Amino acid sequence: MNTADTPTPRQQGEPHAWQWAGWWLFLVALAFAALPTGLSWNYDVVSESSDGSWVLRLQWTSVFALAAWVIYKTAGWAVVYPAAKNPFVWLLLAYCVLTVGWSPEPGAVIKRSFQFFGVLLIGLSVAHLCRHDFVKLLRTGLDGLTVILFLSILAGVFVPDIGRESVVSLAGAWRGILDQKNTLGIVSAVSLFFWLVLQTLAPRRWWVASLSCLVILTCLVMSRSSTSLFLALMSMGLYLSLYRAYIRTPLAIARLVVVVMMVLTVGLTVFFFQHSRLPLWEELIEPFSALFGKSADLTGRTEIWEYMWLEIEKHWAFGLGYGSFWLGPGSPSQELVSHFYWTPNSAHNGYLEVLNELGVAGFGLFVLMLLNHLVNVIRLVRVDRPKFAFHLSLLAVFLLSNATESTALRILLFLQVVLFMSMAMVNQDLWSHDRARTPGELNNG
Image (cartoon, rainbow, N blue to C red):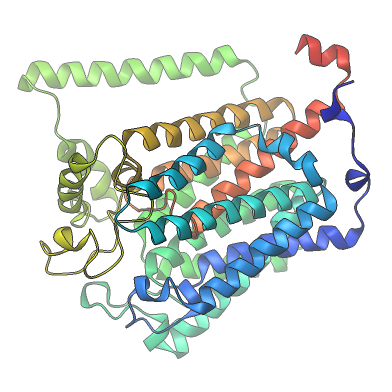
């Protein structure tokens, strides 16, 4: 019998107290990722200066240490097996560490790599401890996020200096007790998605569900984040279309993909014959951006992207160094920032961030990590269809959000933490399923 199928004494029936530890780790990780860096609501201090605060180090290091201790006490070396379901995440982490050799800011590389490893540990421990109660885990996360959103409503109404954006162009938009309106929007979008999933799997009493939904919708609307609204609707629609077997054969899905590709190809061909060229980015994005009240340049983002490409060309093969670019005045980002009358602190595109910091080599590992996760999620459809729909929808949110926001591999940001939690849960479910199969089934599978 395969040693992977033999449970160790630590794996046999963890006490209920360990499950509480898993729920607590999940809740705290989501809360820390959502709340402002270093738990500081002094918005006059730039994020880079608070990024190294003792509060930030204490809050996350303590959670990392607890996750490592929980793994040691409950799983031991057995945690290696589910972790191996996506080897590219560990290769990517190793490459991030390797960039310390050529980074102009080696301290930043070490710090970010440590955070990378720590969040992976949290994901492994949560997935292991809570593998038998997905609904309870999801409910714990939703309850915690709902409390944060409720406090954000109070801040928006009674403490406008904290709860509302002060920038003139964003006047009236709420940020609540989070760092900016977009963060409030994406936390609200994910919370609404969690709410929907729970209502399909284990509905709550109508008044509890209604109050929770009202709090979430209030924050989503008052954040005035059209991107978050789109991601909320997209994730909910995708989940509802997949969590039941409306389409029972892979052939039907393949035909749907072929039809979509044919429509796109015909559209591009017609445009080419009419204009003797392919459409520009602005022409492609304008109809969609107009739906959400944005300009074709996505509120100035395309200008940042042009300068980011110039930075990427300087070190396109191996990158500048992980976490070594946006470090405030005097850092490598200073030259780019000097071109703007305002101070950008990200590229507003996660894929450009990864290319800039890790180069083509690191970006390739990043893509392989996501593709491996996608394959694992698709495999989950035969194990637990609602979980398959849940994790696929979260992956879609992550991929789409990074087209206009920088979340990818900014480890302590909300969506990146959510993705790593999702990845660990999928890997754990697949490994648990493989262990439950007989040796004969494993040989045939």
